[in-house]
Length: 287
Ligand code: AMP
Image (cartoon, rainbow, N blue to C red; front, side, top):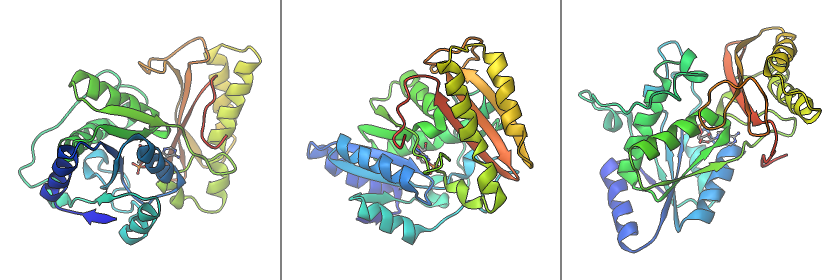
């Protein structure tokens, strides 16, 4: 596996691959890999001739009071893990080259970013779409793989690609979970002792909602208040949102259907965790 830092070198590699008639799948990440990232890499390998994994902790998507400085980083560890998956290129650009002092552009997707995480993190999605747009232009992939773990992010990227006519196929990978149901996340490294156990309230809430829907309960208000009780029973856990939303528009839904998505965000101590699930059609990788 080759680790590429300079943007020009990455673009040159892509130019040659495309000229030889081969396809490229990109997996954008912020690193500190776990099994979820590795499964995205495997999916990318099934989609295209060549796989590029980008690793960039994108300062633009962190708010001023968020965890940018303590976000876990370990390039040698990540490089080993990606290489074991048969990844050909690990693209790890520098902050300086991605955002030079005179950098002054942004890609904004409206509407779908106004709800859920966008409400609590007003600059977050513009940071995401801007960096993903840059990665698309630098690497020129035919496919880009994103996890359903970040359900709103996936919708925002799909909307950006559609609205801006990018000829890139966005492919979703189901949520990968720990054996006990906690959705894998680089931020899970922040969870120690009782907080790790409390974090299970997210999956318990999902299981509860799915069981209620399977039993014929479709009143979103009712199930939402039950979920709030389940989560609030955990000391030190606060709710950012509990929402039943339309899978495409992310607008709130009053009546739960099989396609309705339960979207959750909580703080366990100081760690912000998100999770989500369709209420029917369960298709998660590890379940
Ligand atoms: P991150 O490094 O956290 O920015 O994530 C990089 C990509 O991996 C994003 O598309 C995430 O949605 C995806 N991802 C992260 N955790 C999981 C997971 N537990 N299951 C599936 N995809 C995930």
